[in-house]
Amino acid sequence: MMVSVETYLRRGRRSLQRLLLDPRAGGLVRGAACWGGGFVLSAASLLGAPQPLAMGLICAARGTQALLMTLGAVMGYPFFWSQAGAQGIVWSAVGCVLAWMLGGREEGRPLMIPALAALLTAVTGLTFQVFLRVRDPVELFALRLVLAGLSAALFAQAYACRDAVTDWLIGAVGVLALAQVAPVSWLSLGYVAGGLMAVAGAFPEAALAGLALDLSGITGIPMTAALCLAWMARMIPFLKTWQRCAAPAGACLLVMAVCGHRDTAPLAGLVLGGSLGALIPPRREAARRRGETGLAQVRLELGAQMLSSVQQLLLEREPVPIDREALLDKVRQRACAGCSARSACRQREALGPQLLEQPLDADCRKAGRLIPELRRAQERLRDLQVQRAKLEEYRRALIQQYQFLGEYLRGLSDRLARRGEAGPAEFRVEVSARSRGRERANGDRCLAFPGPDLRYYVLLCDGMGTGLGAAQDGQTGAELLRKMLAAGFPAEHALRSLNSFLTLGGEAGAVTADLAELRLDTGLAAVYKWGAAPSYVLTRSGAEKIGTASPPPGISVSETRETVQKLSLRRGEVLILLSDGVDGEDVQRLSDLTPDAPPGELAAKILEFGRGRTEDDATAAVIRLRPAGLEPS
Image (cartoon, rainbow, N blue to C red; front, side, top):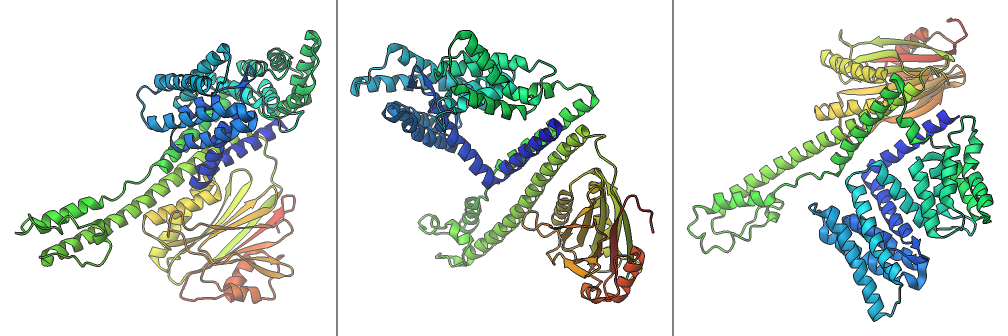
């Protein structure tokens, strides 16, 4: 049960990572997270008063992130504290100004940010006391100064370098803030976070979460002792899953009985947090796996994370713009260098970048010299734009391959954990292909081969045209896909890698791909097409067309993609893959085709009657699944 839950959570995390790597969706998610961080931290309370923890987060951030955090905090302080949150609004505003002033300056940030945050907090407190007659106790004033500096230092450290201690402290700060967030009167999110950390976190994490709940003052129960006891309950070897979920609430009841203070408010949140934490395998245990399999999994995961980091860096790096002003400077030098009127010419500096985009009509005394130079500059600009577009295609292809390799390594890690768990195949494959070439060298290439995890692939690659060149293109594309699929690459990743290969080689439309992925454990199939002819599913009631015509691979790395059609072959249906040389409409009109006939006989009959374009190579592949217990007919 827990293995399946762990796999499900890992897949969810990877889906979120892929979402974050999408520039638009990732920007929205990160923006919402920044706003939510400022909003939640504005709720933090010590001594019954708001604290500048949100200001520390804002000071450590940069640019747009700091602005979004400020907006969240400015909305959060009046929401949680009403008029008492006025200082919080000022803290957030001056923190945002500080973050924008520092910008990308790295020198002195670890020391400068905490000092300035504490200074701004002190100035704000004195201003409110002198001009608005706000009488805060001295101990509260000193506490705010300390918290402003420490929180800024903590979040600056988290931005610079993450480690376990930093994560524990940030978790405690989050619990302190969430303790004041209660969607309903009987449920505080601080208790939920504390229960989750007690069940799924490390011991220091649970202890710091309990300390944060104690400091928030929302209950008189010693929550540090309760969460520490809940964490120690995890060491009991015979503890069941529901007992792990109830451990924080049970420890709270025990501490409640010992100290004599009754408060049932924490119980609901602790039970919910414990239930969530029971679904998450503790990272401490996963990091200490022993044996060759565990070590290989850790290394594969680290390699996948490294590839994802490189992909993110490539996504964030903006291409260098074309220096149009340099092109114009060269025009001025060549056209005006020998001009006798250059010293008094007012048109020289009027040569703007717009002349590189519009028809040539320059107001110049010696246009006969200027116009040819501008024409050469325009041609050079077009060459540079074409070159930049090609480099952008290379960059997109590289980003795509980093993504595919990262997900491939994660898939290998998952398969190592599930090694030996795969059951026997429920179906076996019957496949037969017939081909007719216009020339001796046939451009159609059909391959059938097994893949990992009870998958079976039938691949039909059609090299465009006829003759030796088409045969070489079909052979190259088919072998490239076969190697990637047999190694465990997902079908869509393998097809997009072929598309990148053709795009970067300038071979758009050189080959089409028609791929059937069969699951021998479920009898389900997926038909992937990229520029290939429609396929057909043959049942006792006739032939049904699946798939539509689409542009071939090799046109663009990102603007085109494969199509996929899901179907079932569990009840004896027959899947027919055709190349362009076979007329599928003729096949659909054949009345004597039956799915019970042998695949080789069906393929020969389809090839005979579906002549199509006689000048092109023709191939028909027939695929059928049979229950594994039945003998071949």
